[in-house]
Length: 207
Image 1: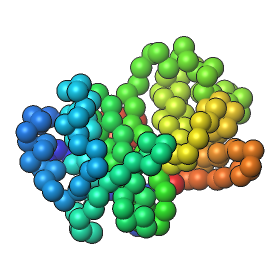
Image 2: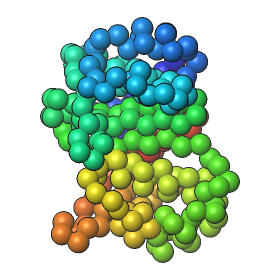
Image 3: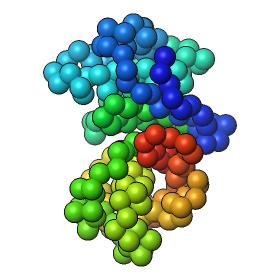
Image 4: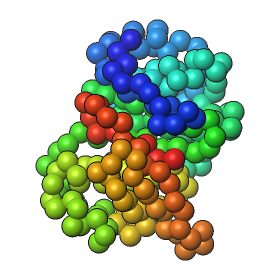
């Protein structure tokens, strides 16, 4: 079972990162029946996406297995949930990797990203004015900001958000940073941003 990183940001915040080296049949066997899904993964036609989704659920299974059997469903916005609403979940995948996170006390978002030069070209679409001095066109830092905002977006999970104006990150040079979501009606919501050390791919949890 190729979980290459597993841990917790806090006692109630747990995550796992999976490197995809198996064939599809092996992933299906590992997943088993401990997690029921209202949307069959076999409906995903693109093989690479199907494999990534399977691996993400295998990572999720490793986190939930000590707690029992669970069922996943997606809400009207496409965000995955457990029928046991006391536990928040989030999954992510990138080429060759998948990840999952759970929060035993509420919502959570996780995102994993490979570093790519293209992030420089789209920086103006997601970097807030308060983040520009720190990122300095640095691919690693830009990817950290992008990943943190994706994690915040997944945690929020309800409506469209403007990444450059409504999602703001701070202190991403530290393991525990800060994230803000700004909305007209709800105002400003504050969250923690956690980056586990020694991961083969940029990983950010928002909770």
